[in-house]
Image 1 (spheres, rainbow, N blue to C red):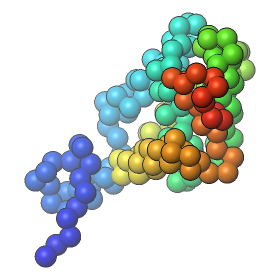
Image 2 (cartoon, rainbow, N blue to C red; image 1 turned 90 degrees about the horizontal axis):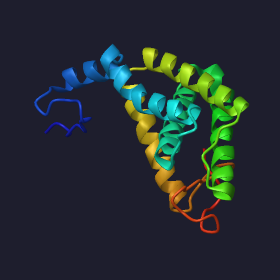
Image 3 (tube, one colour; image 1 turned 135 degrees about the horizontal axis):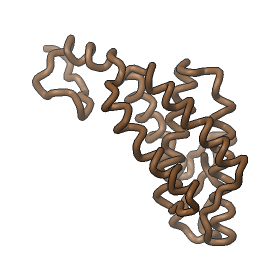
Image 4 (cartoon, rainbow, N blue to C red; image 1 turned 90 degrees about the vertical axis):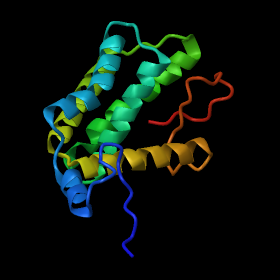
Length: 172
């Protein structure tokens, strides 16, 4: 009896194992790339206009974490420091928000995020659906573990919805 195959949401329930493999091996279409990038670009635009929110911050954190995971999977692997700088920018914004209640980015932080989002766009031009899906799953699992108190060494956890005295160390 064949082993059941875990299907990604975009895969038809009637797809054969070969069709699933081909789907996962293909790169994203231009429309799929736009759909993946749109939320983080909108969040970044909101921050640049001084209108950032908790939700915008979380969208950017997600994009940066996925980008960093893709570098670990050898997609733009030389840009780990680019994503680290963007993560540090988001951590600084979180800390300022905890102290002042304002989601404000400074010039160098905007530049770090702009660089990382540019590289992330290039990553999505080259990543297969399977690689992106695996990276997203890894980020979700790491985030879930961190929120349960199992953050890895050097990981910081930011939870904007918590009051400052309730939040553990920021995560990027």
